Image (tube, rainbow, N blue to C red; front, side, top):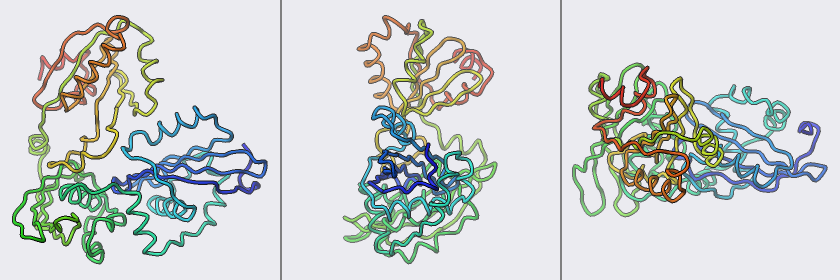
Length: 378
């Protein structure tokens, strides 16, 4: 790779995912160097904690190589790409860097890129920032959509992008009351009253708080038709135990269990699904498939794990477990396995399970050899 510090790069184009309200954005930038070589850079930006937490630099990438990497970095974000200008790209990278200035030190390739990056100036005017946020955020479908995104950004101490949700952005800063970013686990909105112009909601936000949980209560007014937030005030907060939180989060999980008869099936599965997030455990490997969009944020109640389409776990005991909180997803996956003749060649169907509350993660983190051993003791 040619040293970027001694190579003048010419900006060609850039694009970003329309996921800013989720607190994360994927950015792809295309350059041309002095030798007329195409250069692609892919960024994963986190605006709550981690800053620039993903950076990849490719010189003369093949189309398939670039597509696979973009899928791997941004495929789980649930957004689509929109074109952005050079100045908008600089703004997105610089504001992510401000979240965690040390984040770039973890990326080996960034060292040769550092001087150029530090010399960039973020010069977007307020009106340009607002216009950018409207483009890199999805269309708000209903009042729940607006409320869930607003609460998510408040809890994450990332209120900048919430300007796209507000009728009057001057009230945003009074919502910056938490001492650190936390994770919104569940959000429930209840309509209290309405008139021709305004809907008033009571909102209960369950967040992780240190080693416990906290329930934050808000009152939020939403303008009818536009779904813009008119006002938001915090009413109260309650500390909850893990048992109380678990009861609050209960919902059924559907699990498809098969026996693996093909030792290379997992390898092919991983190669064919580069966009899935892989996590390795003592018990085996977990692959997480995310929804193609973030429409789950428009649902009431909102759940943190509502963006998961399905989870695929290849266990050391030789089982493949497929789980989802949506029965139709399991049925669609089962039909795909049948159509691809997986049951004829690689898998032996064992059974379908339905549990009253989520068990997959607990089983994966347990010492039980099979899901059946785990369930017999719980």
